[in-house]
Length: 333
Image (tube, rainbow, N blue to C red; front, side):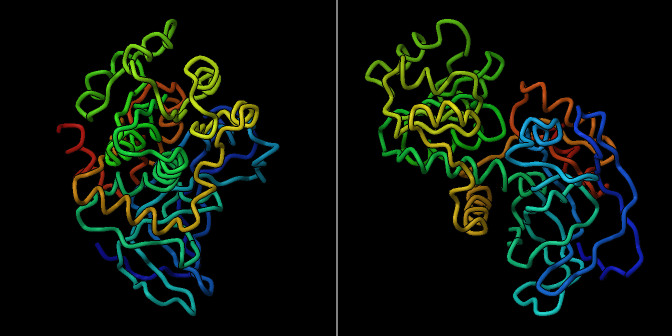
């Protein structure tokens, strides 16, 4: 797939919102297409995942930590094709297929401008929908597993185990030789078993079910859901706070002295994304995709995501030919 360089004055479609609110505030509008400034590249976006953190920013729930400036763009994850190079850019060429990440809330668009060091090559064996899911969920899962210091033979429990971050974390933990207990809804039990994970259904009596699943104790706990799991891990299961990571319940993590850094602790994002992509290509990691949507259907995508009962990722497919060739194959596999 090769794309001709962009032309000044062209427009494109992108997601915008101009006030805090639910998914109804999201609009797909015409905006100027970005140009490649010095040290930057323009990438034509093929696919872009969506994340719960983006929904929390849009709702205003994180306005103290991550305030929005209106009108705001949206999106961090993307995979696409390099369309234009700015002055001084080396090591990447027009037409290269890349995995990229935006810290400027801009990936939910037909094209995005990025610093040249925020793209890495996309291996040919990595599907677009998986490549587009590796920044937020992938690096968060990587950091979470790393932070609890798993050793072969240890037992780790992971809440939200079928979600975007959890579904990757259970596999990374398993690859390290840990015994993984996945906490999720009953509908995901069969899938968790197929991923080499011991499923435990959340709800009343969870602590007793976890003790039964790990009679010799739980060494580490990764919370990918929030809502009391840090308290459960430390107070009821006796997991040492230094071996508890929460990707979402920062208050409880700070109160107990657990790890709360998540993806912010990743020093070399590009290296981690490349390693995750390599695991996918070697069939040692799978990114489950619950659904795909066209860019124009971004509201529906977030409405589904915010139900918090999906398995894996939801991805916006920007290029229609990819939607036909790859996403449709996904639904019929």
